[in-house]
Image (cartoon, rainbow, N blue to C red; front, side):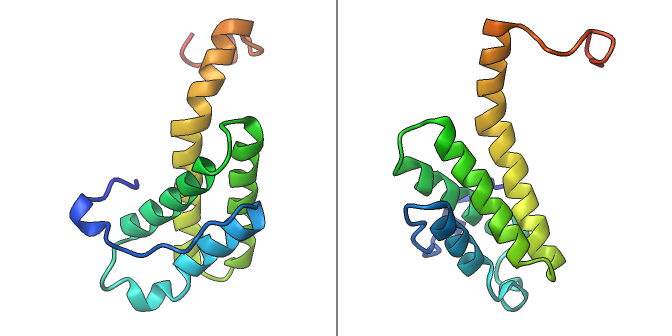
Length: 127
């Protein structure tokens, strides 16, 4: 989870740029040399950094589905570039799940309430 004490947020993050590819580059730059820096940083700090990069990218664009798609696409690009490093993949996966949980899921809940559900009660566990 990307909840890091404010005192531990003094890292200089790369510029996320204006495209999904530049955001992926920034994520990969932030994760580069993870093995050498994990002594000073926890995995949570890395997840925080990736989430902060996604947020900084989204702040440059109007809030819309295209921005969300760009962020998810950038995470996929970053993930493909780090296939050989399980710690970095875990960091990207955590950031992806957090983005979905905090940004996309509330939007989907609003649309569900407005338009109705596609799944039947027999499929849903909470029904």
